[in-house]
Length: 146
Length: 146
DNA sequence: ATTTTTGCAAATCATTTGCATATAT
DNA sequence: ATATATGCAAATGATTTGCAAAAAT
Image 1 (cartoon, rainbow over the protein chains, first blue to last red):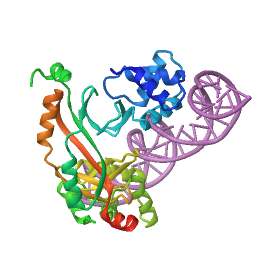
Image 2 (image 1 turned 90 degrees about the vertical axis):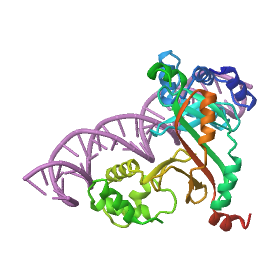
Image 3 (image 1 turned 180 degrees about the vertical axis):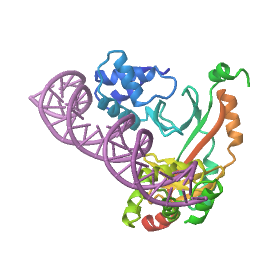
Image 4 (image 1 turned 90 degrees about the horizontal axis):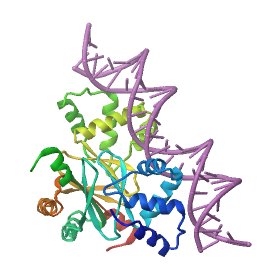
């Protein structure tokens, strides 16, 4: 549950126009705890009778992604999802039940990566780490403790 | 550059039929050093006048993936690619220039993951780590040493 | 006033599916 | 023989694009 304001501010700062569709999408996105898909946003907008075209949703997501305001994830299923996030290097733990995500600060992988670089000869420039599991809420709801 | 035989053997062992299309695809896949897409395989098959239907390619890739003979990757671009691999937990370093991949044995992330689990409350069940960089060949080819 | 952004509908592109036929066992 | 796998073509689904109209600066 981030604030839509931060998204809007970031757009403003970066010199993009603060249009109604972008504001509305910022709000929808901020209301999300976990990941959401482009289709989710379209559906939610429709449900709330906010007129936003499909194309606009994709364009906004592309823009937000470029600005580092959301991050695009690829779930194991192959689905494309997005999560709101702060522009700093980090990872996500993704709940396989409900999709809720938790931010995971950069684990100190740098050392490991340097070692990998040395071993493979690759100059490692970036990486993506996605953790999949079950969040606390779903553990309580579904399985009892443990 | 793996051997097509290993793919074929694995299929056999698992009780699947060794059909012409599967053999042909095993061969095409084994010839790959880096990642490839479903479309790549279709194109290559066509080029070599090996008759293999698109649907068959997707079905074979799905099967190979289930058997852990290839792994499905999601490139930062959003493209879906596959890499041949051995069935054991590991990661890939992917060259952003040529797509060649290097296998990276499981870094000892378990400890980190346990810590993340404790901190976030998630029961972490799996993870994907993808490393992007420039492989030795491309470094030589494009940038000179370093 | 001018430039950016939108919405629509059509176009693309990847992937999946139904079903009759072909093939491996 | 029989079950499994294939090929085709059509269906689906996601994403992109052209372009005239609308909105933000």
